[in-house]
Image (cartoon, rainbow, N blue to C red):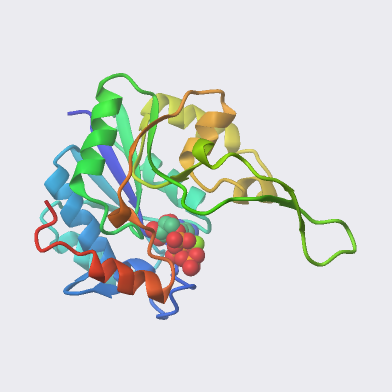
Length: 236
Ligand code: CTP
Ligand code: MG
């Protein structure tokens, strides 16, 4: 079983505002990180699990060590992309497929992990879970000297998707994409908001599988309330 999962959990959770790393924030009985690991365990599609934690953390590392999945823990970096790279560096050599998952999407159902992993086994080089967009999304531009941006266009909503994690990749192709991005300046590096973007920039095809409402990214306090209301009694 040549699939690894990297869970990035090295963010500070500034917008959630608890003063502790987001992955340590409790939802019902467990931390967000433990919820994510529970669902990865139920999915049963990875031989290797790597968790990327804030540098200097001991609390999350203790929770991870106590989890039956026994993930490997490594220190993260300043940006999400740096943390992903730290996770990739900790992977066993020759791992053919890798899933990259946000701990902040703590309630992502096991079925989503399975579908992403299955698409890779079936030959996809990049695959991401997506949901239709409910809002009308506009493109904007800001003129120098003007405060508020103006609208420059409206992409057809049927052509838009909201993107979730886990995102799955053929490992050598993702590593090549990261190597290419390694020399980018700070502004370019900060514009990388997910890993699929790097594949797109390489001209690689990125496939999709259906995402899930429960895979929402817990970002602010209301998200935590919403997530709690979505918790099934049995994650299966
Ligand atoms: N992440 C990470 N390393 C970073 C920044 C983010 O591993 N340097 C992870 C987070 O832990 C999270 C995921 O990337 O699981 C998505 O990031 P986000 O939702 O922005 O989480 P935080 O950065 O923790 O939150 P905030 O931006 O509000 O501080
Ligand atoms: Mg962040």
